[in-house]
Image 1: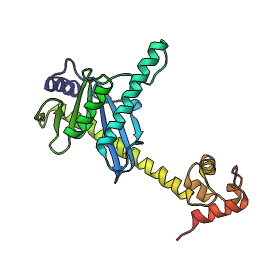
Image 2: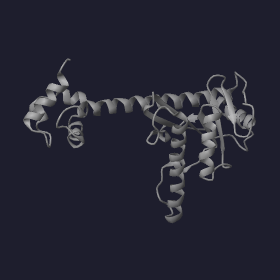
Image 3: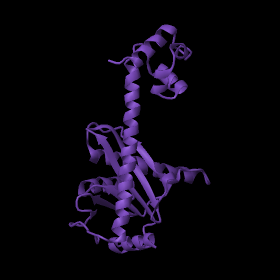
Image 4: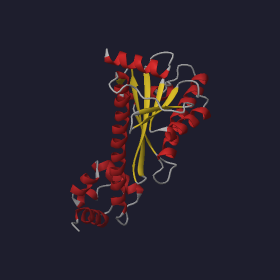
Length: 247
């Protein structure tokens, strides 16, 4: 009942033709611009559909630029949608990713007017400006920013509509942070192995594939490490000593 009420309240407050049964929300997570990750979460009929969650490692942005990172994430999301449309025209019944092939009824970006502006720019580039409603949800006052509207919209503090928006936004934030931490761990792991002379990308992948993790390599005996393709006994000894040193 609360989910239906929330969707109905959002429909009325935002002037939508129907309840926003598919809501997508996007957030960016980074620490001083490093290992930046964008998140996409999907709620259907007020309930999270985790099978449709997607993460995006930021590729084109240098430094802590959340606006440019958001633009990259949305461009990649709707490029996937555009590509799926082309494939479906050429081959009827082709299997596509439902995370990208279905458009939202409501798109939320975590942030205010600036982030909304980047979202609108991407939608215009892909001819989607009038297909669904994009909004920016600012954290401080929990206000909604709508394109073309000079003043933000405030929903009643105890309304189910606002509670749903907060849940969606918080879930996008949680998922972005989780993805960011995972990326940092992977990159730290890679950099640790790269510090060892003689271990390049090929041998690094071979080690991680065989032992499953950096900790697995660290715990392995030199003789076991030497059984990895491309690694001789001397290099195996160097790897073991480097990963187990205490300095």
